[in-house]
Length: 115
Image 1: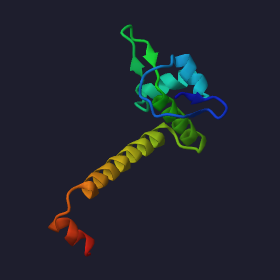
Image 2 (image 1 turned 90 degrees about the horizontal axis):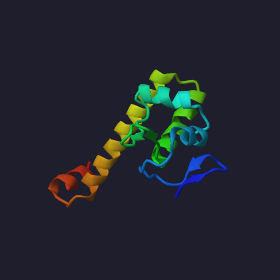
Image 3 (image 1 turned 135 degrees about the horizontal axis):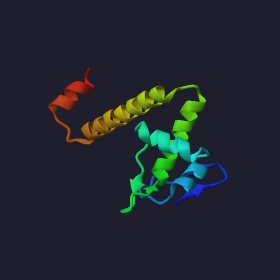
Image 4 (image 1 turned 120 degrees about the vertical axis):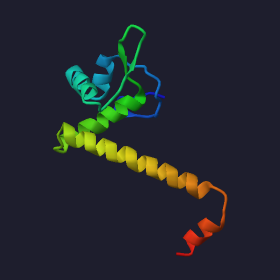
């Protein structure tokens, strides 16, 4: 799927690079200069064509909307970097817990449940 242009929200989590920088800026309701700045600061990593042209995915646009929201709430770029790192860490920990919980039942998991 693509973008819900009425709300500026991404309807899928596709990581396929699709959008040129001008389109991504419009979808994220920000400027091209901001997108370049976010990339320089490591906040987003768009795909590149063989010729080096940036291409943004639906996932990238979702990330850009989140970045803009954090900035609108008063965070600076360093604060946004920290929030994004912490969110990624939490997501990784959750995935790890889900993998552990989905694993075969053994005496260790039974002991954990009895605490």
